[in-house]
Amino acid sequence: MKHELKLDTFLCFALYTANHAMNRVYKPLLEALDITYPQFLVLVTLWEEDEQTVGSIGEKLFLESSTLTPILKRLEAAGYIRRERNRHDERQVIIRLTDQGRAQKAKAEAIPGHIVTATGCSSDEVQRLRQEISDLRDALNEKSHAA
Amino acid sequence: MKHELKLDTFLCFALYTANHAMNRVYKPLLEALDITYPQFLVLVTLWEEDEQTVGSIGEKLFLESSTLTPILKRLEAAGYIRRERNRHDERQVIIRLTDQGRAQKAKAEAIPGHIVTATGCSSDEVQRLRQEISDLRDALNEKSHAA
DNA sequence: AGCGATTAAATCGCGCGCGATATAAATTGG
DNA sequence: CCAATTTATATCGCGCGCGATTTAATCGCT
Image (cartoon, rainbow over all chains, first blue to last red; front, side, top):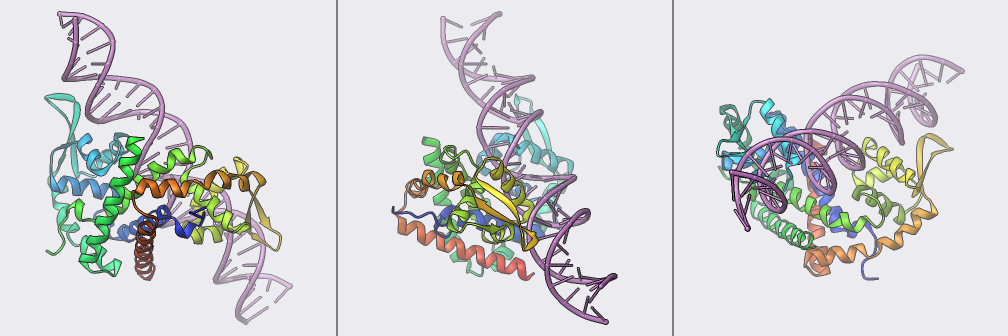
């Protein structure tokens, strides 16, 4: 029995609880923007590249349309984005930032710095760990998609 | 501007997506037990130490009673645990494994090995990363509890 | 041209996860 | 000894996140 069933030895449990902890750090920072954490990730995606389809955003965030559609509707209701069918392919919905949505970016600029501070690590340390966790994600995704 | 607003540089995003990826690897493995991932974590906690209060389990899993109560009710309905008020302090609810709940442990023994395989890393590699992520969680929790 | 297959997004049901609140039991202090 | 406070759990409302299904549009093939 190489691996024993102890919570403290589970990589999954570390990820699970670290993710929750990160959410708790983000919550007060996002209150200024009056958005949730997944809504923030959608806005970041659009600040990087505006005018994307639901599918394109989903691919970048690893989310299904069943998850994204309600989030996008809330961002639309908040006045940060518009949702319009693609004229050239009516199956697609193009997501565009409004002026107000673009304006929120300024309020968000300070967030990454706050997070690095909260980790108690150097920027380089954080980036190294981020890369390792991203690689882990890619390895896990490869296995579950193959199977 | 030291930190730019790019998804690919966010530690939070790496954690968020790695956690989802881990969930997707776990889902088929847990189907044999017919439980969800958080339900599995509760069972692991009880396999380590039976007869715990809701609060004690919550402390170990970093979960509130508002999250745990419904999960525990489902595990009770599945026949894996019993929920009984503490005779000596009727505010508390003691959670106990049933015989069936204890029996599930055997089915779960193989899971950690599957996970290590899915990561494509050595056990030592996984444990090192797990420790780093746990430390990150603790650092983040310290900041958000202090504030 | 036309029809079956594919693709994109939306809808639905369910289980978290949490903040705020409620309920009930135990503790504390006068 | 009893009223105020504290503690433990439960309840409620809301926003994910996903699998399964639906709806609608486009593509592919003959």
